[in-house]
Amino acid sequence: MTSQNPAQCLRDTWWIPNEGYMDTIQCSRCGLHQFIFITSGDAARCKRCHSSRGFSIIALPLPSTPLTLDQMDAQIRTAVGVLVQKLRKRQNLTQHWVGLHSRTHASEVSRAERGARILSLSSLVRIVKAIGIDGVYLRLRDLP
Image 1 (cartoon, one colour):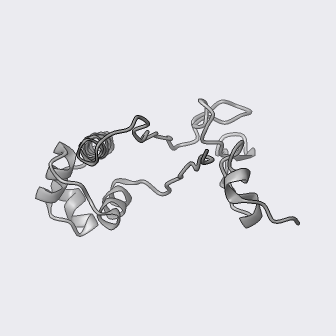
Image 2 (cartoon, helix red, strand yellow; image 1 turned 90 degrees about the horizontal axis):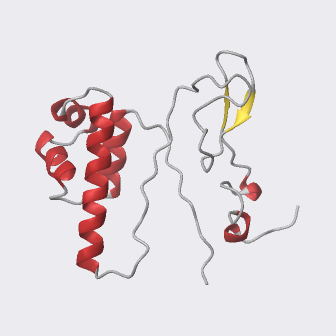
């Protein structure tokens, strides 16, 4: 096996083949084992029987235009807050419940949802894990 630059491997695919990381799922309806391609629009449906796979893929795009640090922080705070709130409400959970199960105070969850506070990565991971997120995928682009 030849060694490749991870950025090169990720140009057309979403996993790093050299590390052998690939997420698969088996359809509960027809039994088909299939790869999860997060770039396809029908990622939450079985390729054979088109039934729901029981999960959703949600994108959180990062700002692409040049921004000041304050502008970027504000956009990220708002985007993450809206995402956390939508996910929490989708699961019919309260801020208090999420706070208890993520070892974060409910007021911290509230501030994050309003975009008033940027969460640390560890706090964000604890919160989304409490909400029901079981994986996070990052997409790497080639640098010019």
